[in-house]
Amino acid sequence: MIRVVLPAHLRQLARVDGEVRLEVSGPATQRLVLDALEARYPALRGTIRDRASGRRRAFVRLYGCEEDLSNDEPDDPLPDPVATGREPLLIIGAMAGG
Image (cartoon, rainbow, N blue to C red; front, side):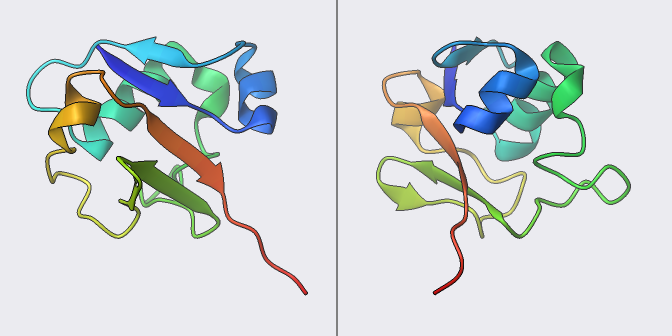
């Protein structure tokens, strides 16, 4: 069971409260988690990843175990605490401006 915490605007779009719990078959990777998230909540398609290329959008960051996982390869295994559900995968909108 993977735990995913979405930012408020994506929770509203997906119509969920709190964190999302997902089952992922095989080794937990960013790609498989995001595939499962978009399959369960189709309204999220195109918000976290580009629909055409499947690449993470630049303004979206992924964190787990207090580490920025955003630049990891999509098929790299997630940290064990995230993969086992002890820690959540955080999806966060990047901040910009001055």
